[in-house]
Amino acid sequence: MIEESKKAEEKIPYWQVFYDDIMLLFFLSAAITFISFTVWGLMEIGNTPVMPDYTF
Amino acid sequence: MEDFRVCPATGLKVHKPAELLIKINAVTAIVFILIGGLMALLLALTKIPAIHLLPSDLFYRFLTLHGIAMLVAWIIFFEAAILYFTSAVLLNCRLAAVKVAWLAYGLMLGGALMAAVEILIGNADCMFTSYPPLQAHHLYYLGVILFAVGAILVCCVFFGTLAVAKHEKTYEGSLPLVTFGAAAAAIIAIVTLAHGAIIFVPTWLWALGVIQHIDAPAYRLIFWGFGHSSQQINVCAMVAVWYLIAAVTVGAKPVNQRVCRTAFVLYILFIDIASEHHILVDPGFSAAHKAWNTGYFMHLAVLASMIHALAVPSAIEIALRKKGHTQGYFEWLKKAPWGNPSFSAMVWSIAGFGFLGGITGVTFGTEQINIIAHNTWRITGHFHSTVVAGTTMSFMGLTYIVLPLIFRKEVAFPKLAKFQPHVFGVGIWTMAIFMMFSGSFGMPRRHWDITFSDAAFSIPFDQTAMMALHIFGVGAIIAVIGGGMFVLVSVATLLIGKDIK
Amino acid sequence: MAGKNGHEFEAPGSFVLIMTFFAVFVLVYLLNWKYLSDLWPIN
Ligand code: HEM
Ligand SMILES: [Cu+2]
Image (cartoon, each protein chain N blue to C red):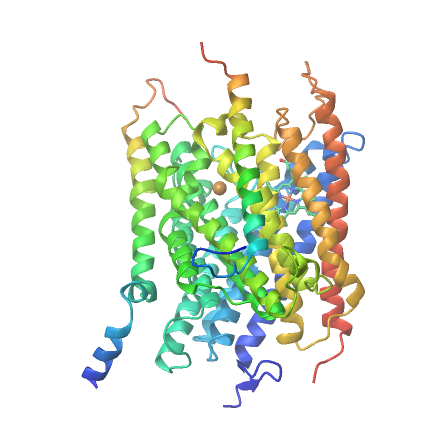
């Protein structure tokens, strides 16, 4: 059984194993978006000094 | 096994509870496009200077409702139907967690109605972006949150169904391309909805008075992580629908599946950062943040669109050439099944998304150029190209397939159906092009009265721009007629369409 | 219409369409930069 599936896996090209891994794709998508866009953006806002007489 | 029927046309095993969910989500979507379309007509009649129909408060109220009913409800209910179709039906298996799917439907419907009612009674004149410090009634935000939770559950049911299919071995090897495209849409949807939750929950608490302050730039940042990324769900779903319609109507198979899958993976990885184009003129973010997120990596996602733009037409061309339409360059195009509304809607969708939406999107999303397009009608014209001429048209095309396949009804008024995509296409192209044209004269978006009739001072627009507004109006009215034809044909099919045995 | 390896070009029509698309793309992009430079001259 184990050998059989191993054999089958060997035949599957590398890229396809990657593309078939929906969870991995999801993780990468979330990581790239949050790091590059969201968290970085929030850090910039956080580092912006507040206007001295800021009342809102 | 009595939960299944075998489709006589395709031999696919259809899970009956899945079928019912597809039906109910699609029908709900069509109800919302009717509401949104009615609002569209009123807005367009207000924007035509010679008519200027609505008073200012109703203009903004209906603009808010138009955005929510169309961009949120019509599109996402239809996408729920697509996710169930591409998982349970195309993979020949049962839908995972039918009860959860119904809960999702209930949350989405309840949420959408709640938001719509709040808008209509005047508690949420904040446009669908609801930028603070504009504040709506807390029930409006709650409605949006409930809708989003429902949409997350839809994605969970979709992934659950993929797991069921894998476990029960109802398909071999990799997911079919169309399902893979839908999976890309669902992955992006979860990242998107996470942003929605992160920003709408605090905003809701702010409206309730629990939180004192919402930071406006932070809101804009995260809102667009939700608002823009959700457009990428639409792009993925639309492209998957192109492959589906091309396969069903002319038997087209992509030449190289690996390349098509690569394109979807590029979407999954890099398309969400394109949210940046909404904050390019925002002073709160650095040039580095802007340049990085609209730079090379984002353009890998643009490349993906280019790949699809090449793959879909060439697959169609090859399929039609195999049928013997081999003369010259374009015989296949002339002899294509133009009378089939699914096919023609798909072609309109590909052309509209590519030529109108894609080109303008990449152009206006360029940091330097954005400054002359931001908040003008160029943007409104751009997204009516992508999300209406593109996504909405492809969903209309899919409807003409789903009616016989899932509802098992012959499409009513076939003559009307045949012309519907062309009417809608001509209308929406005219409308979008002249929106953009007037926008290049500085015509602002979300503006009730560009003649400034009751203002202390006025800034007259170029006569050409005013002229463009009238041509826009003609296009908008034609588009509304085309949209009405779509609703009429769909509803008539459901009510009086002949059953297919 | 011969392809790289002497094969028949499988989808010449689509190729023409895509090239038209690129041409329009380049044109629109250029026009926008031109427009920007008119509105925002560099001194
Ligand atoms: C017959 C079809 C349609 C017509 C005539 C139409 C017309 C309009 C008009 C006149 C505006 C106001 C623009 C402004 O003053 O800024 C607008 C806004 C908008 N439309 Fe449409 N539309 C149509 C279909 C759609 C569809 C199908 C969608 C989405 C799937 C959509 C999404 C939007 C969005 C998101 C806005 C912006 C709302 C805002 O600024 O808050 N429209 N539309
Ligand atoms: Cu966007």
